[in-house]
Length: 286
Image 1 (tube, rainbow, N blue to C red):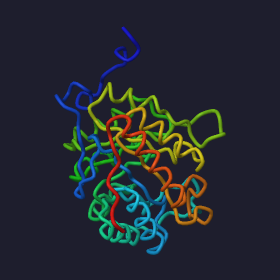
Image 2: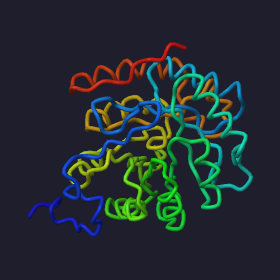
Image 3: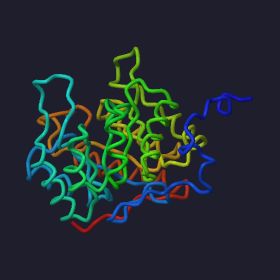
């Protein structure tokens, strides 16, 4: 028995043989996770202003991003750090996404905010810090919206899949797993990005898997090579932080790409994807 088949399978609904085909999650604008097109979710860590989010949405849509990411409610280690613009940010995200034909994914932190966030977002994100917030998982599972479930800071693969199981048990079958790195003894990068998790999850579960190389490395110059590695490993999408002026970003500036860097990355991603019989989304005329 090899190491993969020796893993326990306490997750009954997320396991690979629970479905005859792999899950494909579709958003209202046509963005898909799990098909031949590599989904591209891009945008700032935090929504800071109308000008910032609209400029970013236009820039990333023009290069093929079909899902706009941006934080409205931000879980920060320090209570004094920028916590997000809340409801106002949700409205700005929705307006910018609609203007450029994109879907919206944003994080929900509190079960009490699920209804509010679901009003504006096409996909609800469960962040790394909340992967095992079981009350939140249940509430989001019942919200009727696709879910982006990030791996916890120190979560094992089984713990991650068991978190997905909570969503599945609640009746939500539209779940996308997002590898975003785990904590390591080495602080040279923000996290240790586990690219091996992509093919491993594909063998264990029917759920689509994407990768966040921005949080996974915390270093802008490492985002591109790790994004390419993720696509080569079979990732169904990427979650990339992009900002008009990273040095002035309210959060996560050091790992955010400029518009020019994102433009260059998309050309490289398309090359790798096509080598594997896949492609990136078509650019939006913006």
